[in-house]
Image 1 (cartoon, rainbow, N blue to C red):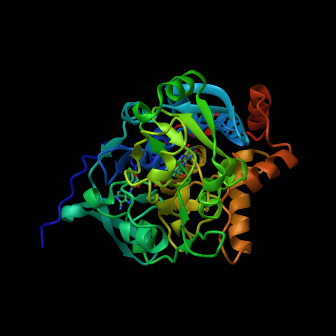
Image 2 (spheres, rainbow, N blue to C red; image 1 turned 30 degrees about the horizontal axis):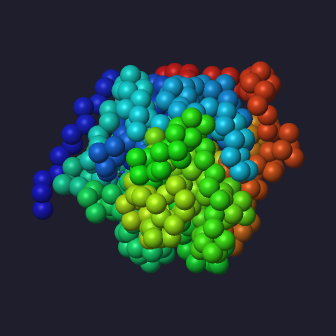
Length: 439
Ligand SMILES: Cc1cc2nc3c(=O)[nH]c(=O)nc-3n(C[C@H](O)[C@H](O)[C@H](O)COP(=O)(O)OP(=O)(O)OC[C@H]3O[C@@H](n4cnc5c(N)ncnc54)[C@H](O)[C@@H]3O)c2cc1C
């Protein structure tokens, strides 16, 4: 066995936070913990940050606009402004969605990486955590591939819920070679599961486990010139779906309930995120090429987008509304790991809260729970309530549609009025909370 070694050059802060998983939630957690005064190391198994966020791009759509503005008012504006800075399109509409922005998936990673570096976060890519060393309810160290050992005071599980390949084979159509690149960087490993805490699994409408990611990307150069030109001009192209192909669109398998609506069967929705984001989980290539404008279509992500997509929601940690993992003293979680939640904005929100609370943990401070007068607080609490009530987890929650967006509207939590949002965050006494140094 290789000799274990500690390799992190920690700074001078009394608080040492180890974040595992560099998707949107891990990045937000690392930023918030550093902002609150901690020394932070962020460990990511691939060579890129942002995880599934590397192939997403839609934000500020429907209730995510409110969420983005609340996050800014709460002090997490650096991350949202980073997204805004590389938005290819702003304030666009497509079926079921209003005032969306689309960030450029080819530019966003380096923007977020530099925001984290400016905040003093130590980023270790190509570092996959494979195990934890714990005694009782406390984690002391994590082990990475190659036997490296990293010691911390508090840990954040931001490892997501996608993959590994065996899961995509068992619960999907096999490995479709998505951006997470399991064959090259090794499978996802959950800190929570390694700490022997029992996780829950999401389900599809038919009760089978997991849910398939709801969009894939086409190379823009492979589109007909007029389709490409229109996509780049307006951000959206709607292509009528031939009748005979409609039944092939399996809405019930989709991870994103906000796009599992009939419009997405009758119309093929393309969005300009740098690639042409196509709002179906997968699409047989021969069928796809029968649609006018797509005769030469090629998939950019996943490579086998003609056959399948990544399967997610396979490993959700039990946690409370402060995002502390139930049964552990110094483990927090965020993003898809922290509830049956979909989306970048949702991952950023929970990441900020977990990073902030990780620092509070080390300082023996009371943990922060966001109030339900804010969409942010109500969302986290509602998702956890629903997960406690429901035997099976077939519904996923997002600010951007389906059940939770309806609830936002019913409770008057949905608004695009920036001043009103700032006022309610101020009334809750939460202005700038995520950008305060606690030490
Ligand atoms: C194809 C696709 C399109 C999407 N489009 C959108 C969209 O347009 N808008 C939107 O809001 N949402 C979209 N989503 C959903 C959104 O991307 C996710 O819900 C959210 O970003 C999840 O973030 P996360 O940090 O929880 O997890 P992930 O993004 O899964 O990140 C987890 C990270 O942890 C790393 N990791 C895992 N295990 C380990 C380990 N043991 N050690 C070190 N690192 C580890 C992974 O490599 C990964 O980088 C999309 C998702 C997919 C798959």
